Amino acid sequence: MIRIGCINIDVSHPLAFSEYLRKGNRARYVAVYNDGFRGDDEVAAFIRNHGLEKRCATVDELAECVDIGFIQGCNWDKHLQYVKPFINRGKPVFIDKPIVGKMKDLVTLDEWIKQGAVILGSSSVRYAEEIVGFAQTPETERGKILNVFGTSGTDEFNYGVHIVEGIGGLMGTGAVSTQYVGSGQLNDQVCETYYIRFKDGTTAIYNLWRGIWQPFAIVVMTTKTTYHFHVDTSKIYGALLDRICDFLETGKNTLAPWEAIKESIMIMLAGRISKEQGGKLVPLDSIPLDDPGYDGYAFAENYAANAKKMYL
Image 1 (cartoon, rainbow, N blue to C red):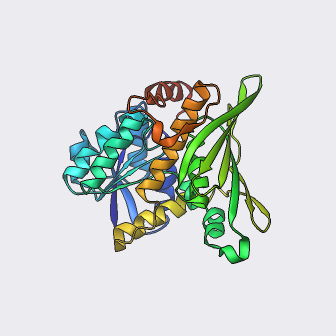
Image 2 (cartoon, rainbow, N blue to C red):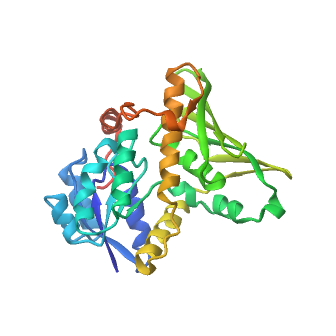
């Protein structure tokens, strides 16, 4: 049985992931470290309702007693500080989406991975059966992809990264630039459009509707015809978790490679810069190391202010 240590229960994922895993016999959440905004009452309820063994006082204590760490706090700017205790013990870490929100943090992860750290991530949408099934269909049957259009809602980065990673699951790596196209607004709801160019001449578009949930809808134009589908979100957590368990049990990694996860974040960082610059095309390789990126602290503060108790 794979022993999972959870760092923070800010979002719904620890709850949903644990519920899925408890239906089988491959893995369990066994311990938690929490310094997020969830109170002691919700932490105690998570431990009690999901059969965890204990609450740890430090990340080091957590890393010592588990096989893998799941970092699931909503402040992505704090993610890296939780990784080192696992690296020091030669243990893998899964960092939930968004993995980080700044270029300098991506560079740090690059360095750790080159030194042998096993860091897994990030969005479960990559593993939606609709996306995986389409990507695995032979080009001779479906045609070569020319353009992918995808939609997402709720917020710009925390949720928006889902559809960008989903696009990556279809297109693979090779993005060279992002360009902010424009936006529309109704009351407090804003819909923004971004354009991605790939080095092979293909393109992608992602729409981010901020202020309301939207389905992950995808349109794929190929050299043969046009396909469209909605992602069935009821199955994506299981698809991600099964791949993590497969890796821990067999050593075979079918999760997205680090370069693909990194590229998705860089696409969005370039898109943010493009928006600030009035729609200028921004090459991914031009993102400066001191770019402020997306503010994890500000997001976490707003998320906490609007969150309802969900673990009781």
